[in-house]
Image (cartoon, rainbow, N blue to C red; front, top):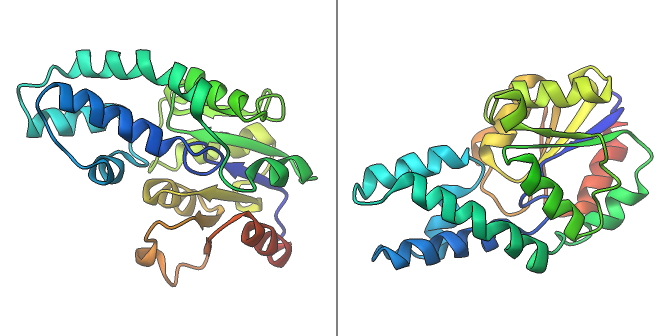
Amino acid sequence: MTIAGLIFDCDGTLVDSERLAAQLLQQLLTEQQITLPVEEVLLRFRGIPFAQFIREICAQYPRLDGPQLAHQFRRLSLPLLRDQVEEMPGAVAFVRDLQLPICVASNGPREKIETSLGAVGLLEVFAGRIVSAYEVQAWKPSPELIEHAATLLGLPVEHCLLVDDSVPGVQAGISAGAQVAGYGETDFSEFAGVANFHTVRDFAEVGRLLQRLS
């Protein structure tokens, strides 16, 4: 199977934003006298639609005002990302060196995606090639987001390699029929043996995988 294009998740794959977001959420919850370790917030938050996280945390703590919590997070997160987010190690150089069509497919809203990419110098690289779940109304683990990304690239989805650090993202890519690289330290053991799934620890391994698949 020849890979003709790459689809990247944004948070936790291209930019190291997930821990910043989890720390902010932890701070907002602490202000409401709810104490959760940042690692637990990160685990519960990673890869799922933000609205789902808000519903789940409010179900556990009914005294929370979900809309207010979401508003505070959105208001504070963009300046935080703009000022503090960094690339995942090797991401910028890897993306800039690619000779294949690329795009971003993220569960986040466009403003957040563009803010994060702009902070690490990748916004112009992905100009016109950003797919936000909020715009297509399809969130990972639905395969529709990945299918939209492949369409944007003008490629059959099976000729695309998705690089994603979350279980829902990997599920979306596998269901769509893309080749999928589960990136980073996430436990992807449930996908062992799936023909179109691969694990990669860093972008050097993404490069080697791309060579093997091509």
